[in-house]
Image (cartoon, rainbow over all chains, first blue to last red; front, side, top):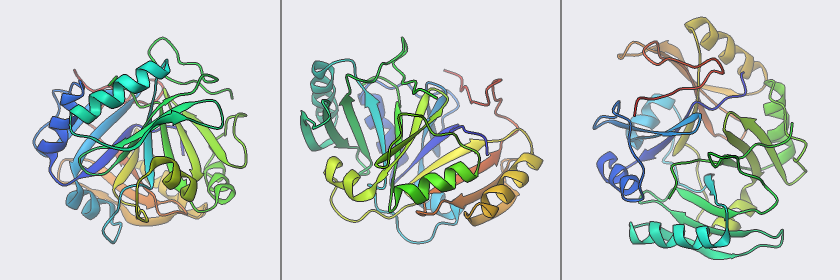
Length: 140
Length: 140
């Protein structure tokens, strides 16, 4: 299988509510979005929102999912950017599940969950370089 | 918050087992990987594997997660590529949770889960164009 991720889909209870949260933190939805599915371009990958019950039906994955098994990260350029972003997302309705703190490996990390409980890591990892667009490139 | 996803982390029960699965389907881990965490470059985003108990502790998200709330997709260039990929991942130990079939919107979609139950969509969506590297670009 090609080493690609073309789309990350979050199952959500209410697509309009989830979209409103991501718009409050400044994200711009693609014009291809509709009331059933919302797309946000995020570098080479698209981030999407889709009703959880429809995602479960389409994927054939049995049982009620509980968030926390997958985490997305947004790497920042400084500790100050981590603090400012956590304040911004909290004001937009996120829950801070881990206030930002120094880590044993020299980073500075906080976590929040979105209105559906999906976790996001907001992190400053000084040993990882971000490109001009803000993305990570790992050595081969 | 910047409209970026720098890292997608799957919480897994056994990092070595999960890494072996992704290597069997042809993915190449970054040399920055170690027994605790594995990184695979996937376009502008990095896909990672990390022990679920450590992810839960770091993220502060309470409760035992159950997969199915987040789905990743790999968009293919044809129906034949979807079939070939599903056969490849099944041979590598994936579970096919939805055999490939035509959809109401004109696509051709199958799903599998990896050894930790994380779902992946393998999909051909003829209305979505992939760039040369195989990634989706949605209209603004």
